[in-house]
Image (cartoon, rainbow, N blue to C red; front, side, top):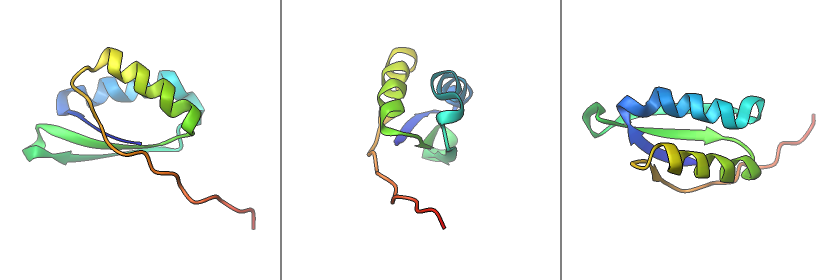
Length: 78
């Protein structure tokens, strides 16, 4: 899942995601954009959790912009 938020909201976003997903979040990548005023965030989590995160973010951070959701390739046990 990809989204963009104000740089000042990234700490709140991280806390919100951790409360919503807990150990279900695989990773979170953050990259500055718009000269540091905003950040792009990539979250790796299950589709079921993605819906919960979207709902929580829309309530808490109305300025957030959602990008595309991309499915990761299936992992196979070696």
